[in-house]
Image (cartoon, rainbow, N blue to C red; front, side, top):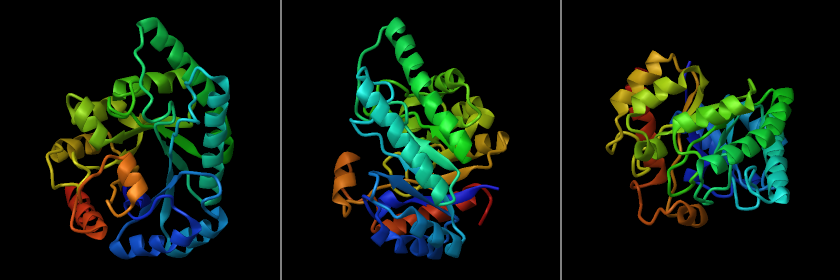
Length: 284
């Protein structure tokens, strides 16, 4: 059964132990799942968070925040190893909170762009796969899965399309690694959202259901009917998570290039988006 979630970027960044009350808030708004970005080790008491997840009955996922110093495909081996160490931390934190999935662009630092020849791309994919295989083996032991997220061309030059992400998944060759789609990014890069979803098929484990401007889902021009039809066709049973940002949360708003309010309030964006997604998928 599909779960409907909210990413805490909409209210706080970084998410810390003092912010755990937001899980109760998300529950009151009607969400089934709360996704926490793990920005830095030490931000959050995972055991305390686990208690709140249990008390509220919310499901847990996390997302990896791939900064410049944590990059499994970087030429510098120290930066590669820092990326793998960070992903292992994300896996540990997720498992301690009772979650089973870490999503995100785990293959490279967000914002790193480089021109590749076909030979260089092949080498970069092999390097990313080798390092991510280490993280995948660790995730398997912890009962956690990794969902690779393609980003738009302005945030990475490496993995922009479902087809490219599936190539990397195949190279990694682990049952613990699948795919995530973010409709904000896919709306820029994919020719047809529905066909991209069908291509991902049973490897699509997680969806960030975002509008073209990151406003409330349903308020813009994403082809939502096409998305819903394709998700139903592949019998998608993961989570639809709203990931948006507020100009009130200055650091993440700057990083995500959010320069104007996307809705009257963060709560209205979350609530309106949730109502739309439930109706879209036939769960009023």
